[in-house]
Image (cartoon, rainbow, N blue to C red; front, side, top):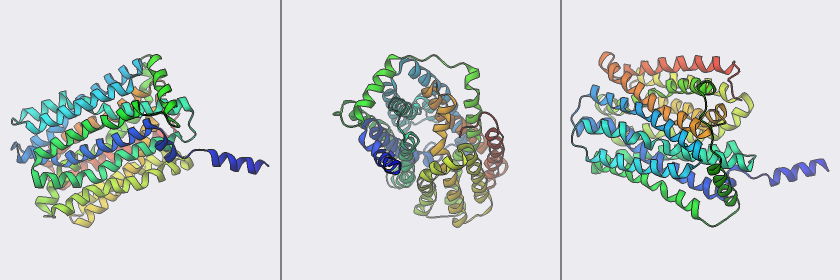
Amino acid sequence: MSSALGAAGVATTPSAARSVWASPLYRGATVALFLSGLGTSAAAPQITLFLVNDLHVSLTTAGLFYLTNITAPLAGYLIGARSDRSGKRLGLFRWCALAGFAGWVAMALADQVWMPFVISAVVLAFSGAAGSQLFAAVHDDLQATASPVADGVVSIVRMALTAGWVVGPVLGSILATAAGSRVMLVATGLCALAQIVPMGFARTGPARPGAHAASASEVQAERLPAQRPKLRKMLPLLAFTGLYVLVYAGEPIKYGYLPIYMRDDMHLPTAVSGAVIGIQPLIELILMPVAVVAARRVGMMHLMILGAAFGVGANLCFALTGDAAGMFAGQILMGGVWGVFAALGIIVAQRLLSQAVATASAVFMSSTAIASALGGLTGSLGVGVLGLPHVFFAPALYGLIATGGIAVMSRSRLAVH
């Protein structure tokens, strides 16, 4: 009898995939984040080329562009704190998406060197908070419905962002080659604007299984303002985020200089260099569900130690190999990094500040901007001192420090299992 009841319980437990499909909120967030990843990843490897080829800046100055991202964490914190007080996640999401559209289109129209720097620091700083509002809205609903597959739902929604990064670099490279970097930047802006469409449907669509619960939880969140968390309560989140910044700092160096290295020094065809960039998110997409399952066995923080170590190996491949096989090997290892951190990072961040999930989501997700600034500064200085490809030794060192820091944190009371 007990085994029959157990089997019945398993049978009636919804899968994460079915939960995402049944809920307009989850489904809309999945599509919106795919569009976000598609647009952002199309632009990321091309920004340096746009600055160098269209605005005729030096490689050193182009690397400094990433310092403009330093304003994004402040913008993200302001949006997150406002969201936690008001509970109006999707309204703020829409404003941030509009900021992304305006910023990328203005970037495409820039004809002075200073313009992309100001646009990125002032306008695009707010666009990055769009995704954090979606994750906060999804978290609210999962908590309100006590979903037994909450981690799986978050992982699937996060995987959509990664799926956009699978195809975005290749499409961006093809579009920039065929029509120019400015057209590619406009396309990125259109992707940012298009995020609003599926979430609009999620809000006004007909009631379905899971949809009523999402709407009710959203209304409840809007009526229950949260207090701004004190700094002491945020320390675990800030410690984890700081280590994540070190892991991520290699990404702007890679996107800024790896395409140039592959084109000018290795003379790889455009299709091959695009495939090198695109293989990382493909591996990441494959490994994300594996990471969720593995984390249940070994713990999230312990798995992240391995992920950070993969980053060290990846950057050493970029620095030392000098052929297409080495570039693919490095990107495959980097896929292992983000297969772990992309699947689990947002979950860990929200658990470390569970009383203010929008703030936690915004702080964690906007930390990529700090990492971009750190990586941009490192790349700008490092390419002058070390040259290509030895500049990749710097992110390898950052990754080594992060690996040790996460190992220490995994043994402390701050660890999340």
